[in-house]
Image (cartoon, rainbow, N blue to C red; front, side, top):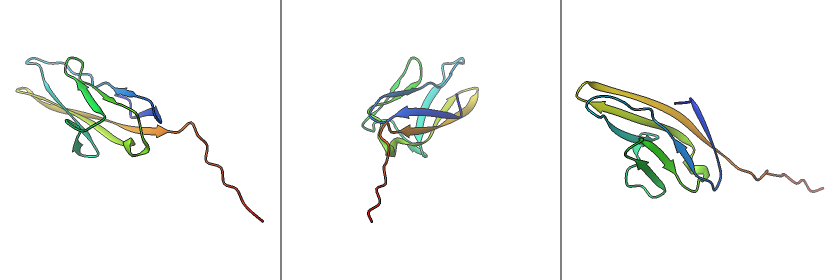
Length: 95
């Protein structure tokens, strides 16, 4: 998993957590230490363990972790998601 993932405001981003093992591991996704399961705007593909964040907003920026576990042990990986805007902030000064 890359250390940083970029997404564009209003778009969708997918974050893949490379998982393999026997028995098949359980994968749990977290955003800033909060489970994303059941949260609106987030979905996980159970076959590929890919997290999809739909309609990115600024508050979706943060650290995303996937925790992988089975009877052989556990592991984790993380990426920083940075949501970028296609709009530029313009400061206007008045005199």
